[in-house]
Length: 229
Image 1 (tube, rainbow, N blue to C red):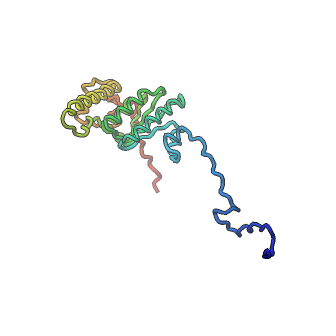
Image 2 (image 1 turned 180 degrees about the vertical axis):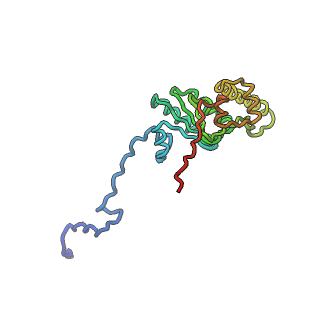
Image 3 (image 1 turned 90 degrees about the vertical axis):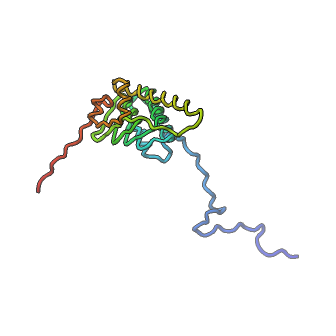
């Protein structure tokens, strides 16, 4: 049998004409690059949260709306990170914040443990237990349109049987602890705090300063008259 004419061994095929297909022996896949180290701030705020990273760079913690468990845990971690990362004050911005009893006490504990000064500013309305987050800061400012409402904590989920008594006693202990901390921060008798929370007292910026909840009440800007044509 005769061997077919041609070159032996056969030559490899010529490379394909561009554009090359994605998977081809002539265009190997790029080697994957190892991910770089993730900063501590990115671990707290999320790798792609550029706004959170910028705020952390400026040592600002911003809280807004109803504080759920995830938000509280992230805020506690952020405060701990900033406390360990420098000696400059931490700026706490509270904008329209409300929180349940457990969330408020957790954040109050975190603020009390801070080794650097915390400067808190209230914007909008602070409701119920969230007022304590402003009151326990080292320096407290109320925006010109801020309102602070002292209000008793709402009851949690209803329980039945033997758990009711134990839960009620524990809740009463936590409520009293919050009232004692507010009284200490405001320089007022705890009995007055209890009465004002029961009445749902609402304070404007200047009233909050007179009450002892804030150190500074920012005045509103006066309208500047423009030219009359």
